[in-house]
Length: 281
Ligand SMILES: Nc1ncnc2c1ncn2[C@@H]1O[C@H](COP(=O)(O)OP(=O)(O)OP(=O)(O)O)[C@@H](O)[C@H]1O
Ligand SMILES: [Mg+2]
Image 1 (cartoon, rainbow, N blue to C red):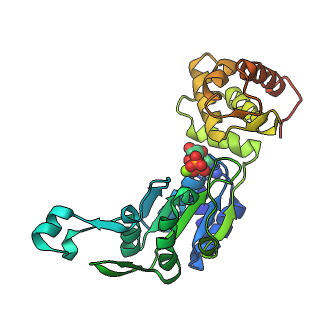
Image 2: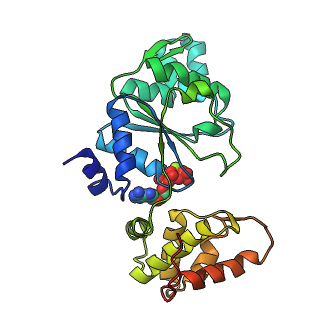
């Protein structure tokens, strides 16, 4: 069985044959990969599945503007240093050093939100598999060490760009939204409340409609469709009510006027109901 099939059959990744093939080629060529795509397209799920399928550990870091170099690399335990000095046992490895020592996959979520200092520490780790830690020494990456970074495209969130130097060390795999059938399959497998097929279809359609309609600055991901389907299953199949609960937190309108979203959702619901022939892209 090919690794692609294993990812799809055993790790429950729906579709994505093209993207997974590209990602696996990068991994086999020992290249680090930047997974780029909007919220909820499966970046984390794919990274986790790839690490599992390759039998490598996964060390996960969620980036934000306050994430520090010391946190990424590791820190000395001050009381132990006072007592015994900078002995190796006093060093508490951070995710980067841990992943390097274990030959694991380091998943850096939202790398572009991390401060420049953190991005700079990564440069030698990425191209030479080497990090120098003061008082501890040089850390060399064990075979298998691989960085998978993620970023949302700039228009979705106010994020900084990655430096040119950092980008130069990554191959890019883009993930866009999937087709309606694949999204329905994702909802089917992710939902916890056993929604009917009709509910699944409606939940997927209304979610997709928020992406196709120009009145939305930001549409919702398949995560919203899963939530709508589960909620509707708990609300006697009332997909409209479920969408009212699930979508306000997940979409952004071009013109934010209170009351508008509700009317818009009713309209989308009508258009995307199974009775209608309109098929939102
Ligand atoms: N192709 C897919 N196959 C199986 N499940 C998927 C797929 N795409 C997305 N999912 C599911 O959809 C949900 C969102 O995916 P995930 O968390 O991986 O997205 P993400 O791109 O990491 O989102 P974020 O940008 O918010 O971090 C998860 O429950 C995930 O399992
Ligand atoms: Mg994620």
